[in-house]
Image 1 (cartoon, rainbow, N blue to C red):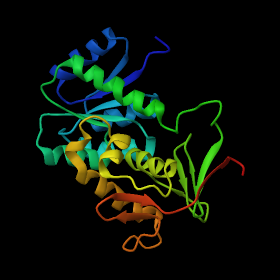
Image 2: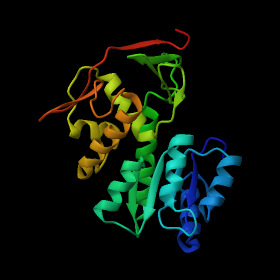
Image 3: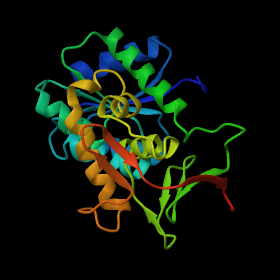
Length: 244
């Protein structure tokens, strides 16, 4: 199945992990399994995956820690699978940068729909390859963003680690410079379905992004707060060739 979407299911509960992987295979996915974060890291070092389904509560390294690694080091889409359905738990997962959050027990058909939705959003992101935009980078205030490789480069030429959610948020601003974007619009761009439940997640992601790109995050000049309206990127944005 060389063209099948590759899914890694990470859950210490074999009674859920194994039938879920079997179901995904029947739905046309190429599914692999890992019973722990350590096993998942080993699989990720040896194989390439398109998306990770990740349990939050596991012995040893938990899913939140592994999620940070997946997003910041590998830029992989992540859907959390968890029995903890409280709003605060969901907010933590979204703030870290997870793409979706599914509470156990769940209908596997709904999970498949969410997987496809997350992958569609990822395929529409500027980081995906197209003939017209292969080598175009965003530049703003001395910064450069390579959307194909999801690399953020500072004024001195150093690469700055950026999570998947931070990347999507930054691209939303770069695609709409000097425009006021309210939370609802940003949430729709960054998180998609059900994100309206977690509007504080946008504020926290913006705070993290400011700490990375602002000279003084306490007095932001690039991502400005528009009181009563939302946020605005106050910078000129250009799209240039990769070697430009």
